[in-house]
Amino acid sequence: MQTRYIGSAALGRMVRRRGIPEFLRGLAGYIRDDYLRWDAFEKTPRLASHTPSGVIELMPATDGRLYAFKYVNGHPGNAALGLPTVMAFGVLADVATGYPLLLSEMTLLTALRTAATSALAASAMVRAGARTMALIGNGAQSEFQVLAFHAMLGVDQIRAYDVDVRATHRLIANLAGVAGLRVLPAASVEDAVRGADILTTATADKRRAAVLVRQQVPTGAHINAIGGDCPGKTELDPDVLRDARIIVEFEPQTRVEGEIQQLAPDVPVAALSDVLAQRASGRGSDAEITIFDSVGFALEDYSALRYIADLDRAEPESRELDLVPELRDPRNLYAALGVG
Image 1 (cartoon, one colour):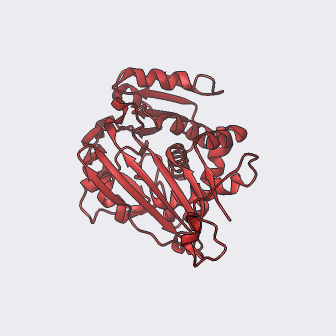
Image 2: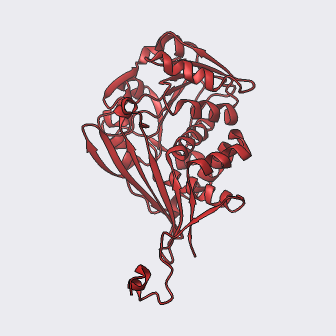
Image 3: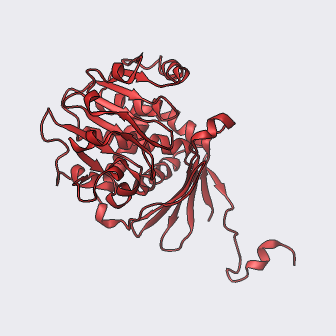
């Protein structure tokens, strides 16, 4: 028995074979299914180690049958070093034996699962007929977010803004060939959000920021806030939060890391699991502002690893690793060194 391995190149081939829209829809289906099994999971906030330059985190989740964890970092200054802001890998293991079934890259997979989760949440929160999205922050997450909202909600116009105009130009160039999608550059946040149905904030700076203030938010808009994901890092002015219906992934984690770290602990929020199960409403009226305060939760990584593990069984180039030594006598570990 060996551990299966999916590296960055293999994941890219897996996505290309299916096409990004199909891959994202399939991934969102796995995430939805697992959120609907919310009570089956042992849940805990991620374990984070913060430094002035960034954060390194471990994110575990288990349903008693499979166990998953992700190692992930967030270092906003990495681009200047030629490194991604976020890098990750993950493991999926069998709970009954503890055997690691899969080792996978998760730098790409995290971007894909974040986008799929954003669009899944939005599908239960946006007004009917929403087709225009403002995208504030055009970094590494931006293409994935656009493609997920295009594939899953039919969003066909993106108004993109970034303080670095080169990021916006890259986004437009990368998505130029996507049928039925227009990506337009915006001159400012105000220009981007004017008349938009959905506002996605995906900035990277590790600081308290007010990327959006209350007067900029159109009536009835849905805000997909994905950039604020650790203590001291926010994107929304508190007045935006006070006037909105807020949905979160795992409240004990989001109270510390999300936009709602700015609010009193008794300000009510609803759980995404309850919204997807229709135990809570994602929107009260067309005029209401809704916010998905997304920080990323380990259950989504569990779902993503489970999804690609299932897909990998059909891959012609599926690879295995001798991550665990094969022993004739499982009590004779020393023999695996081959020195005797």
